[in-house]
Image (cartoon, rainbow, N blue to C red; front, top):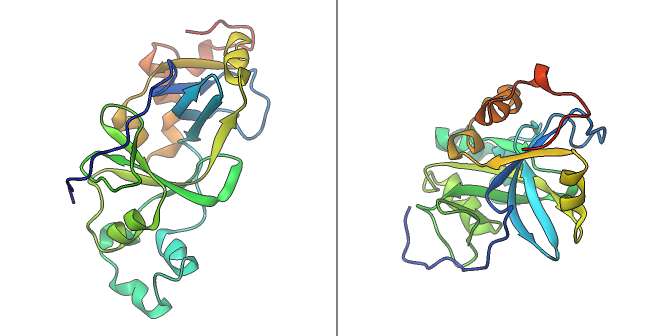
Length: 201
């Protein structure tokens, strides 16, 4: 449901709104074959969300954990809420939930992370989704990926990541298994072409 709330404005870094696509040289199990959407990048560091890792929890599980739902009420949730996708967003603060969503929903705590996508990490959006009144496009992520000052730039320089502009349809795609190859296809690359010594885009 659209509101009249104005989103918070912040200065964007050059990696904001970009995909990070893990190279074969990425041996960290947290990030092997991942696609990450960078939401914030500055001289202080960077943060983003892994887009292709499943999460065993369901949205009703989250509502029960937050005590926003009684067990016998789960069956009465709108189908959009029962089927709402939860993903593992990264290894930092894995108990904390974030919702990436289209900008047709805004609250006082919504932060724009690209021209059309916002981030909200408060209960208001969870409640709205549970009522079937949330944004048209959204996904919830538990945890996030974070880098200290200069760390991400160093990893890119050392061929840890390929980068390219993010695509909204890929961010919200439910086909997690295909996202890695689909992200590579955005820059005309296939996983078979990559080697640990390849350069970056």
